[in-house]
Length: 222
Image (cartoon, rainbow, N blue to C red; front, side, top):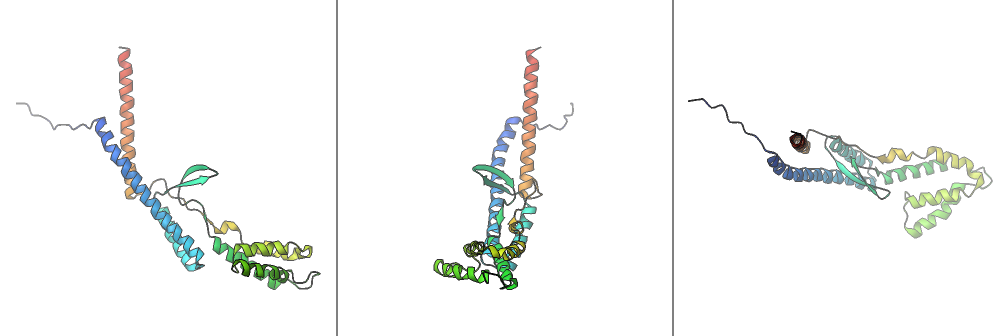
């Protein structure tokens, strides 16, 4: 009797397609979980900013960066009506932290500005206009509306050029409060390995389809 070698098990293309369908569903599910986690961490940063807690802002930013840098995070952003897919958090701003810094610059400019100008203390005059509006509209001292009111009033006085220059020079750059973290295209996580397996299966199916087409075309010329 002839000895039979080990039986070879060949996976057919249709079997790969059957496996691929649930894998695609799992990939989408895991990617969504990572996106939800990123969104929660980003919301924590924004909440800490609204609470004006600088220590909490730094802590939540570190947590967000650590997660985004070590996971595959897909985010869909609206760019002038167009939907764009980005890997990472997308743009977000520490608005309240910037407003606090800008208001501090206004106060510092008031302290350093001399009263010896033809229009008197321009900052005080602007405050006399904007503070009643702040009380009337419920603006806080670090509200963007209050700061905009102050700048508008100060600009009405030509002799306030020195104060304006000091304010412009001392205002922090908005780029310091503009945040965006990018995630890697692939990471060694459960989501990453699931995507890798899916990609391998897709490549195998594609190659087999190309080979099948070539064989079919070759038979036409035999």
